[in-house]
Length: 403
Ligand SMILES: Nc1nc2c(c(=O)[nH]1)N[C@H]1C(S)=C(S)[C@@H](COP(=O)(O)O)O[C@H]1N2
Ligand SMILES: [Mo]
Image (cartoon, rainbow, N blue to C red):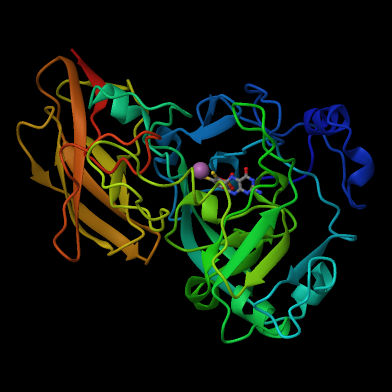
């Protein structure tokens, strides 16, 4: 993995008018990754077979995780931008913490400023956790439930586990003078403001977080997998909110409001709630990601009849950890218990394998169903919600067996 800018990255940055903003010390080398599609708004290369373009976003191809260790490498980690990757100069970047939940109740512009160097001097922690889009597996509402939902048609690849290193948000808030009556904390990104479908400007990407979660395990991450945070994943600093919907993990964070009254933004009011005929009105904003499973197999892959293979996969949840997994290779008619392996970290994933010797030729579907430590199982069906969030059903992966 080479985090230097390729020549193509440099062109993309220049085209975005962003080169003057870049911090010094970047070296421009020859491209190192296999050429793949180029998406406006994403810096990293999208090598064929590793990341799949989805509009202006990029999804991990689960086939590219086969044989990969516990964490998702940078080159295959999905990217979800509401607008485009921001280029922030780390040397001049400041994080401002302000609001009515702090001593002295400083207004915006009068809060405490933290430079990157300030953060580097604070205590550090590493958390190995997933970031997963609330809309991950949204395409299953169309393919399995007959109720298509608008929005990025993700398969199961809008998820990745990385080692995020940074400063606990608690340390930052304590230094900024958080008061016991603080209720909500709202981080805000430095990327462009977002235009709604009707053309209204919704402002910068921001979403309130209850103070309890902010003071618990939330991180102001500076590193991903032991290296400086890459542009696409929020450099120089992003929030990591373990187990919660992707949108909570604000990238390119530039300001954090701490308030003694509840805060709101489009990302916890009109969006990121479950709206639909099966849900009572006024559902709360989404918090944790549900239990899911995926095979490390590219959709549509072919297998040869009579040739034994080891199918691998992973299961994860932002709630109780997965306990066991069962697998079907015949579209859900018969099931076999999978063997689980290695770590089963909270808010990360559990790897598993199952041996399979295909016999019947033709199209079939691979299914995996996880059970968590409370006994909850992934359901067969998921009731429709307007925005296609939190699809946690058993996903049918189409594959073909050839003679
Ligand atoms: N500032 C900002 N933060 C953001 C976003 C964004 O567009 N702008 N997208 C969010 C969403 S919807 C997701 S799923 C995750 C994706 O993180 P990644 O691109 O590092 O995988 O970032 C979240 N944080
Ligand atoms: Mo997301």
